[in-house]
Length: 337
Image (tube, rainbow, N blue to C red; front, side, top):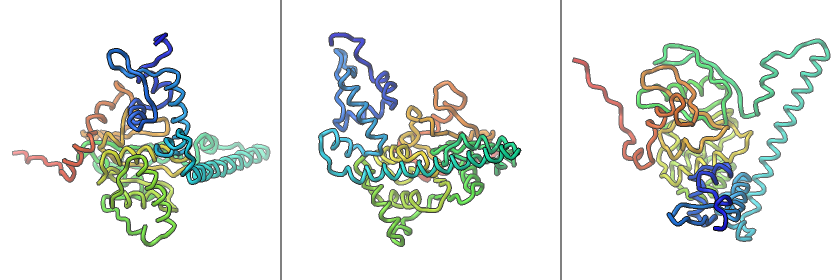
């Protein structure tokens, strides 16, 4: 190395590229990027590695799976047509959303010209994307009806809490409050896939991308994707989204959900897996809600060490291997003598 200032360590490189260090390691494992090593064995990213990393990140933002990224980088055009078609659909959806917003702004300007002042609510809704809306509701038991302002629902929202904290009740109350929302419970099945050829096609398309990112197809994954891909729902609440999925599949799944279009329907998911909720990878379009063990009201938690609630969230999460061993465990409390 001629100048150490030209080289970045893994944390610096990840921050510069806007990804997690975990994502960088995954790219390296797939042979997509090859950082140098220092004399003490630390990864070191020079100009070439950073340029390759920027290409990978850009292709991932287009919705390409890791296998498709590898083919593009190797000059292989196979499989690009479906990826580009999906990206075109995303852009068209965003365009329709933008046209709708422009129409709303024009309508508000017309009202203003006629002497009617828009309400604060009408104006603030312009700042939210089509997939984000605000709700408030009375909390169910064990919180005793206290009002909860969920505010803007992000494209991805995680609900976390220890056993018996009420997180499942909170999730179901959200599904009850949002019009045309649906809750995918632990008893989800893939029955709808066989009955709906169009849904089957969408599920198969998504499964092919997930497999290229390392997922293993299973009944649990098919049932989950059937619920996520179904039409006509404004918001989807998923109970323990990692149920029945191994670590590689969970990692492929959350990467897929993060690549969805900005206008896709929001997903609220309960989880206790650190593969699904990797605190180091939470983005600006994601939110974390903690249900405390002491039945204090749920609260939003920022994904930064030292912030209120961060440690409580971290202690609720475990690796998929540990989660598999403890699946089905029921909280038990001895009777007080």
